[in-house]
Length: 297
Image (cartoon, rainbow, N blue to C red):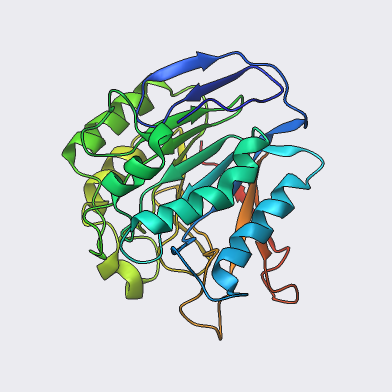
C-alpha cells in the first residue's frame, strides 16, 4: 500500500508490513488527526445498471469526504469490497471509484471480507500487496495516529464462506503488536462480527474464533473497540469493557424497514470517542446520529 501525503508527522504502518515511520509534509488539504472515516460492504461489481445505487453511494460518500474542511487522518473500507466473489472486474471498478481519494492524498486502508478474493485483489490493486507479508495469506496492518492506533485485521476465511476466522498466526501477530504499542487507545477493525456481545441472530455468520480473540483483547486494557461490518446494519454493544461497533454498509441493506446505507465518522475525545453516522437517505433517523463512547481504564 503506498504512503499517502498528510500535513503532519504521522506513524503509518503499511498493510502487511512492519511499523514504519513516515515523516511527510502537507498535501493540499488540512488533516484532522483525531478523525477517521469508516466505510464497509461497498460490494462493487464490474458493471451495475445505469443509476444503480451501489456505485453511486460510494461515489457520493467519497465526494462528501473530499469536501470536508479538514480531511480525516485515515479512511478505512472494512471488507466486502467486491460484489459477490471477488472478480477481477469488480476490483477494477472499485479501483476507479477510489481514485479521487488516492489522488487527493487521503490515507486509504482496505480490509478483506467474505465476498473478496485476496489473490485477485492483489493482482488488480498491485500496490496493496506487501513484499513481505506480516501474516502469511492475510492482509493486515497497523495505522499509528497521534492519539490512537488502528489494527487492521483480515477475517476472510474463504471467498463466499459466510463465517470469518482470525486464525492462530494472525492472533499471534496481533497480540505481539498490541503489546508493542500499548501507549495509545487501540481500535481493532475486521469485517466479521464477533459471536458475542451483540445480536445472537448474527452470531452464526460471525468469527469462528471470537472467544480466543476476546480473551486476548479483553486482557489488554488499551484495546477500546472492535469495529466491523458484514451485517449491513448499525448497532453499538459492549463486551468485557470493549466497545463493539457494527457500522452500516455503503452498498445495500438486509432489511429496508430498519436499516439504510451510509458511512461512519469517528472522532477521538479526551476519554473516548464520538461516533457519527451519516446516511445516503437524508431523512433517515440514523443520519447525523451521534453516540459517545467512554473508554475503559
